[in-house]
Image (tube, rainbow, N blue to C red; front, side, top):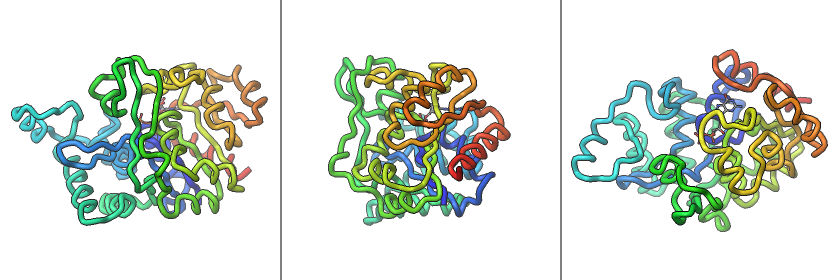
Length: 308
Ligand code: GDP
């Protein structure tokens, strides 16, 4: 079993390659729930949904989230009621949130509901939310604390960030099978995701980080930072805000206590010696996933490295 730690868009694109390299039945993805938010009375799990919609071949390829070809009529109508509509929810997408919310209300765990979403959309990987207990990522800005989605979507990452915290993390429990799957994995891959808020929120769940340190599986990361920039999203900004360098070196620093290998981009090849000095093997290759062939090639390199 290959276990992958995953956030949203970057991770989902990598996983599209991974499912073409190894069978879906041999992949367990531990997903981020720190971005989860309740809106319009509905429980939204943005990163879990991005992973499922992408692997189902249904994601909007331009946005990287939501369903391809979705309409926004419900949202337009809510706007007429002066309802806050800064978080875009398509009409078909709403069905997922209605299903999830209803199932949670009758007492199912998020992991059980997620299994249903995965199955109904025809995906066969095992997707485990890092925790079934509430954990939410908050960003401390000069304008005060705000939920990560408010910072990201409503405020478009404009406020200056002073810190990041994970509400509920100290009492959070890893979802059943998360620790066991890491301990028994044949390899662990840290997908190219935001190290602070996506992978960071997974690592904030007590027990997950120590399981990564303990497991005999090789742990291979893919840097989401290329040439000191993020491909998309606020990773570089957030890394700087919490005291890391916004480079592949900073990514290595985030994971240095458990990572065996970091895959970095060719443009960052000069950083390889310093990463190796941290005791992390470094592979230099093209890490920008434009086409499916890029995703498959990157996934092959990562899988091969877990078997080293
Ligand atoms: P989010 O929740 O949608 O922000 O998704 P993630 O946590 O998965 O983070 C997005 C990260 O993926 C960003 O830091 C991007 O730089 C990274 N990313 C997106 N596309 C690529 C790519 O093609 N190659 C690499 N190496 N990183 C990517």
